[in-house]
Amino acid sequence: MGSSSSNLNTIPNSQELMQETGFSAAHLLRLYERFEFLDKDNKGHLRPEDFEAVQELSTNPIGDIIIGSFFSPGQETVDFPSFVRILAHFRPAEKNRTRDGAQPEPANSSTGKLKFAFQLYDRDRDGKISREELLQVLRAMLEMQVTEEQLESMAERAIQEADLDEDDAISFDEFKKSLEKVNIDHKMSIHFMK
Image 1 (cartoon, helix red, strand yellow):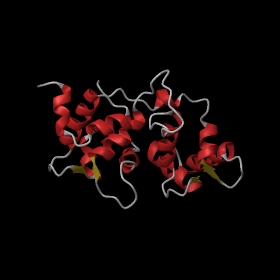
Image 2: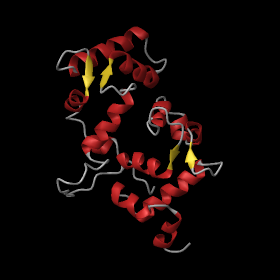
Image 3: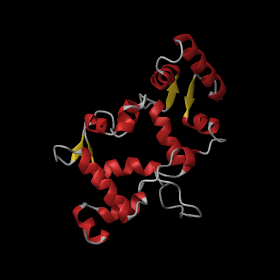
Image 4: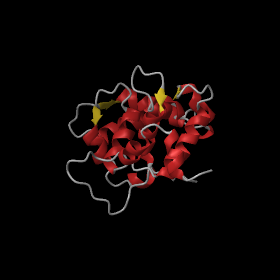
């Protein structure tokens, strides 16, 4: 196998992807290998069912929700650049990294990670997590471990605690505030070279 930079030639727009996502050449090559492994039909894109080959997703109670996050509403496939952009949310944050105000917030920033997590709950993408959306995720996460009454109680309590404007839903700002004591950088980071 040659140097990483020579193999990057097989990845379209690799330099732009590295700059945009912060992934190194080695990370990008590794992700490309994984993408190609999942792309059994060699079509250059993945469908939701292709992700079922990832054991951690197929056995995860919210695996379908996580897989759904790779696809925009109405989109049935994801290409490699989009795949990498989603995974960039899980890249560990770089310590002491500064950005000038003209640059967009990196996907792996605390805010980027929170926005990604928020969309997992905001199923209809209306900018609010409703009680029913929260219940859907709780049902998936807890499956048969608790009763429906307990799930409803959990959702009610979460809404009461986070819903500062009392509109019976959780906005992104409320979601962010409710998680301010959680180390989201740690909880939502994957070391891709393992």
